[in-house]
Length: 102
Image 1 (cartoon, rainbow, N blue to C red):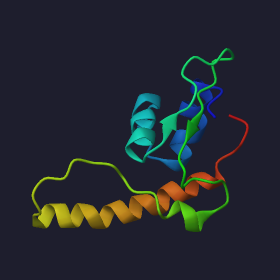
Image 2: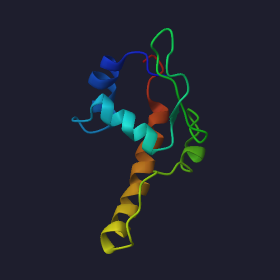
Image 3: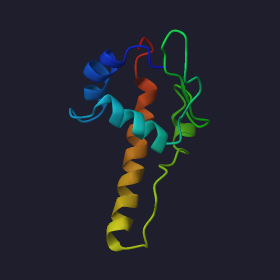
């Protein structure tokens, strides 16, 4: 649940991602990792996302999440990118440690 976009962008994203990560970039990353928005027109303007593999505190289940990307034909560069994807999955698991009050 995202309650305060500005607080997310200024306090949380720089802590868990690179300093240049903006809200819309984070939003796209959520979709890329299989999160879907549950309620698009929430009366309180909260953004609620869901992923069946994401449960706060359950890092083991989080490791089943996969990045959804279009795959070009296999090359040396794409194999290197696949290795970095598993490193990114480990960073995604760190989201289980994000604060609840946003």
